[in-house]
Length: 216
Image (cartoon, rainbow, N blue to C red; front, top):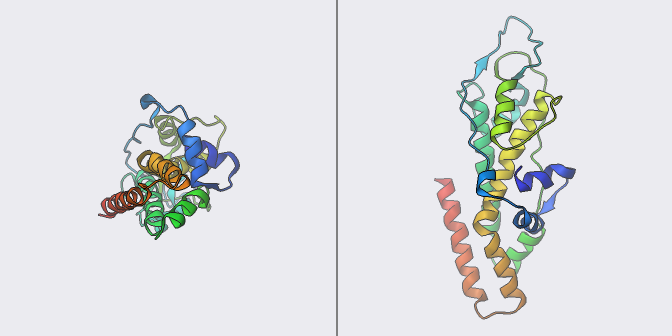
């Protein structure tokens, strides 16, 4: 299970970036443990003329505000997968922008040490028609992500787990790229190392470069 997801979902409360990095680097995260890509599936459609009571379907209209927020058409092919990818990319951009916009060493370190991240908030609204994904699709996606869930979990719980997994992967990408650099920046600042300013400038440039690539 992705390291950050474990801690975010553990209590539902926010954790500072630095705290999450400390947990992330202590997590035994081998290459073979990395989540596999989510399989691409065609979105199916429910029958609008008949009330669907099946519990083996998740109607995407149930989270339509989330699709709207991330500008994903819930009727397009692999809509849920596209939403997951948008969520993962969005949190990476948000965090990179937050860090890049800091204008001093102290401000950057303060943000890194104190900025709180909470799990993705998912609100569900009843829907029984329109585009849907099957429960088998959700179960397969969870397995492909290297996650597990109770056999009695609802389709809503499975969807929330999948969405938060991609949210967590976006956060973990920040640590994979910059975690060690922030650790070194803290050390240089604490010891008043002469290389501090140069290292800080290089880190800011690196953050800005990755942000520019993501925004293309």
